[in-house]
Amino acid sequence: NTTQQQRPFNRSRVYMADLESALHYSLRVEIAALPTISGAALTALKQYVSVLAKYFPGRPLVQKLLRSVDSWLAEREEPELSSRALQDMLDNANKIPDAVLPDGVRWVGCQGTQAHFRGYPCSVWTLFHVLTVQAIKTPGADPLQVLEALRAYVHNFFGCRSCASHFEFMAQENMDHVKTLSTAALWLWSRHNRVNNRLAGALSEDPHFPKVQWPSPDLCPSCHGVKRNGEHTWVQDEVLLFLKEHFSSERILQDYLE
Ligand code: FAD
Image 1 (cartoon, rainbow, N blue to C red):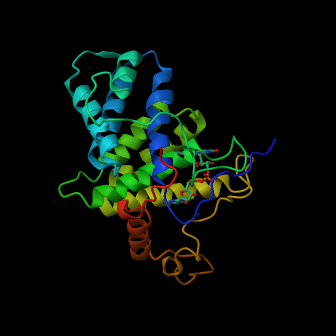
Image 2 (cartoon, rainbow, N blue to C red):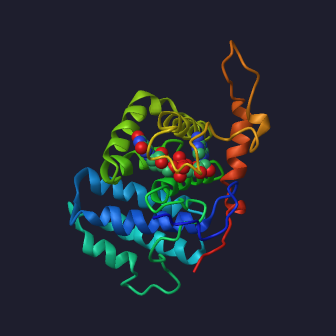
Image 3 (cartoon, helix red, strand yellow):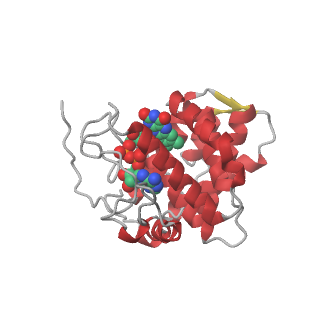
């Protein structure tokens, strides 16, 4: 039962509708699956919302909601938080004017050709690439904060548990070698490519969106260097320039938003 793509989109662009859908799904579905949030999960939630409040390049009403949830979480000193209380905050039970987190998912750049392809995991990658690039532009940003938030989010909440253990393995390997904001963006890019490499040809791959080493030469010719000993090479400075452009807030398309 094939669901054809319903929303025409440009494959070489990032869409705010995917990013807002990632926020909705992570905060109202994945995290809400736990009736109470405590210990490492509560710390992970606080880290996640804190990076969103700092770096999410969203519409003013969404930014306002994220900042109010962040301040509310930062003030919570209890060891446990009920999911209900969090959901009330996300639904703006305090009636803060002009603060909204849109409800529901609307995949655009992350649409799959069938319902079980792409969607949420695609939007998680996209969201965190955007956040690493936003951090580069923020004076005084901590180089590891976005990556640590992703790592803790995936470890504590991400529904795909084998994805979480693979990602944790990569993080343990050398994430602590990251010392600058630029290397944080490059670290995430290269780890995402490692995942693409592992998944190429797997059953989970949408045949219309094959897993490739990204960005492909048609997206960024200068990112690809000369072969050494028959091996493909990347020109990392060019990749960084490309990431900063591709995931920049100014280029995010606002189509299909409610
Ligand atoms: P995605 O890989 O989700 O990529 C989304 C978009 O990002 C692409 O369309 C492209 O525009 C862009 N992109 C692609 N590569 C890069 C890159 N290197 N750098 C920057 N942007 C890029 N699935 C598994 O089956 N096993 C796993 O172990 C696994 N681990 C995962 C770990 C994490 C942290 C996450 C978020 C997801 C994981 N997944 C895993 C899901 C998988 O990686 C894909 O997200 C999913 O299969 C959907 O693929 P997609 O075609 O939408 O492209």
